[in-house]
Structures are given as C-alpha cells and as structure tokens.
Length: 309
Image 1 (cartoon, one colour):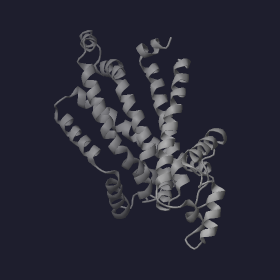
Image 2 (tube, rainbow, N blue to C red):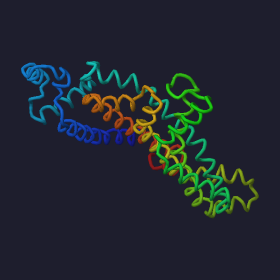
Image 3 (cartoon, rainbow, N blue to C red):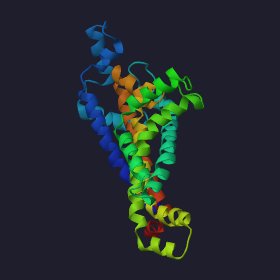
Image 4 (cartoon, helix red, strand yellow):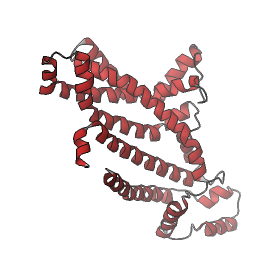
C-alpha cells in the first residue's frame, strides 16, 4: 500500500510540471507588459525597460520558465502580485480555507441529496419517483450555476429576506452558496448512484440474500450499496476537485472571498503571477484529491486491498 502511494506521488511530478508549463506558456504569450502593469500607464519607457531588466523579463522563454520552476520547487515561491506586491503563496493560502469550506459544504449537500435519491430510484425502477427524480437530475445538470445562484438570491434574499445575499461568515451566509454549488453535483451523483445500483441489484448474490430472507434494507445497504460504492466514490472525488476549481462563478455571485473570486479579480487586472499561481495551486489540490479517492478504494473494496499486499 505504501509503495502504491509513493508511486502515485511520484507520478504527480510530471502532471504538475505539465500543468505549470501550459499555464506559464499561456501567461507568457498573453498580451500585456508586466512592467507597464506594475508601473502604470504614466510611467516613462526608460523606467519600464529598467524594471523589465530587473525582473528578468528580457530573458528567453525557457530561462524564465526554469527560474519559475526553481522558485516553486526550492523556495515554494509563486512570485509576487503585480497589483498588491504581496506574496502569491500567502494570498492563496489565506483564501484557500474559504474555498475548501464552500466545496466541502457543496459536496455534503450533493451526497445527502444524490445518494439516497439514486438508491430509491434504482430500487423502484420506472416508478413515478424514478422518472421524476431523473427529470430533476437532468434539469440540475443542465442548469448553470450563475443563473441558479441569482434566482436563489432573488427569491430567498430579496423577496423573502430569509438569507443574506453575500458573504460567508455565518451559517446563514453559507446556505445559498452551498445549495447553488451542490445541486448540480447532486444531479451527477444521483445519476451515477442509480446506474451503479441497477447493475448490482441484478447480481446473483443479491437474489441469494433475498432468498435467505434478509430484510430488504439490509440487502440494499449492506450488500448492494457497498459493492456499488466504487464508481460513486470516483464521481464524488472528481466533483469535489471540480468544485475547488469551479467555485469561481459562485464566489463571484455571492461575494465570497475565496480562490475563485481572487482569480476573477486577478484576470480582470492582468495580475499574471496570481492567475498562474492560482491555477497551479488548484491543479495540485485536484491531484491530491484523486490520490485520496484511489486510496479510499482499498478500504471500501477488499479485492482492491488484496492487490497491495
């Protein structure tokens, strides 16, 4: 098991290098002079050229990329913001807990809604509940988060006044963003749970368990659900990773001071180091989430665990 984890950690290195190269290349060829952005439009050309030389912006592409990789790998330094002159690493670390909390709440909402609905739909296939829940799941998958967030603000904040429309400091502030980011994920989990459960409930050992006279709830929860968890875990893990990087619109709509909101502001102001560091930070987090999901497989399924011994 430890060898498997070590091997997966080593495989993360080329993935992170590839992501870093792609985002660095995109930022390098994006129009706009970083020196001009820092000094402002009123700065003289002499001052701009001097700052470019100090920052090493006149060096060839691969020299700049190698310097960036060295700073990230050795010093854990993602650079400094062009606008605030603050450390990119410090800004990302300060904002990440808020995004992590939002993504975690979204996944909790999605799991609490998606798995039970998917189980009931699979055990009552082609019933009214099954058809109705699948229609709702299709609507949930198709509905854009930004539109849903604005509708929730309009109904529950403006008309009813039950919840605040912005911020993320109290549990009341968290309800609407969690629902916005969690319902579309719940639709994906519902569809996957139903599909996986339908494959399992038709197996011979499920019929054998029922023939032995076991209670239906025990047959579904202990035998069927446990064997159907692998694809469900995969979807939950992937969706959690997507929510970490895809909370941009939700954080912007509800004015939540997380990574997504920071990325949007940085893109608007052409703060290249912040955008570059944010994308790299999210990519590394996503990779570790996938690693954790793979490790969980071994604890859910004994057949997978036996392969590591």
